[in-house]
Length: 267
Image 1: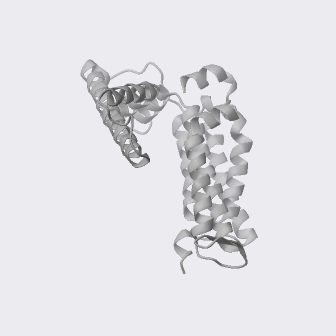
Image 2: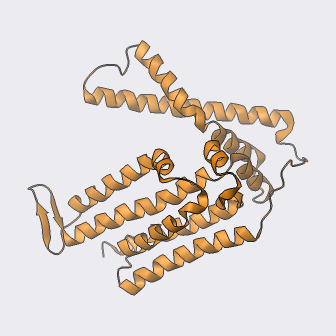
Image 3: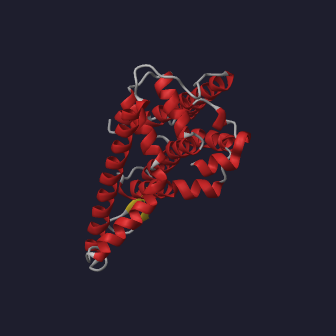
C-alpha cells in the first residue's frame, strides 16, 4: 500500500481525498450492485470504475497483483452460475450433468461482472488510502472509539507482514511434518489450518499493538492531532461520483429492461 502511495505521489487524485468520502462512494456503488443481479447495471458500474481507475494512480499490473484472488473468484462464480442455474431459453451447452442456456448464461455473466464491479472499488480504495489518514478520519470525523480506530490502524499497518508470517508458519508446520506430504485433501486441510493460524496470529498481533498504543496515551480522552482530517471540494466530487455511478447503473438497467432485484429472482 505504501509502495503505491509512494509511486503515485501527489499526482493521484484519489490519494488526496478524505478516506470517509471514498468509503461513502464505494458503499453507494456496492449497495446498488447488491440489490440486483442483472448484467446491465454491473456492466455500467464496471465501465465507469475503469474510467476513474487512472485517478488512483495505479497500473493494471498492480491491480492484478493485489486483486487476482477476487478476480478469479468472480470468474469461477460466474462460470459455476452459468452451468448450475436453472435452464431458461435456448440451450447453448449440454454435457450431461452440466448445461447452459441463454438465461443461465445471462445470470453467470451478471455474477461475473458484479463480482468485478464490487472488487475493483475495494482494491482501489485500499490501494490509495493511507492507514494513518483513515485512522485520523475515523477518530476525528466519525467519532469512533479510540480502541476500534487503533485496532484498525494496527491491522492495516500489519497487512504487509502477513506474507512473511505465512511463510514462517508454513516452515514451522513443515518442520513438524504437517502439510509437506499427503493426498490433495490432506494438503487442503493443512492449508486451511495454516490460514487459521495466520488469522489468529494477525488478530493477536493487532490487538496487542492496539492495547500498547492506548497504554502510551494514543487513546486518551484529550489529545492533539499531528494531521487534522478535513473535508474539501474534492471529497464532494468523490461522493458525487459514487452517486452518479450508482444512479447511472440503475437507470441503464431500467432503460434496458434488465433490472432484476435479488429477492424477486425466484418469483
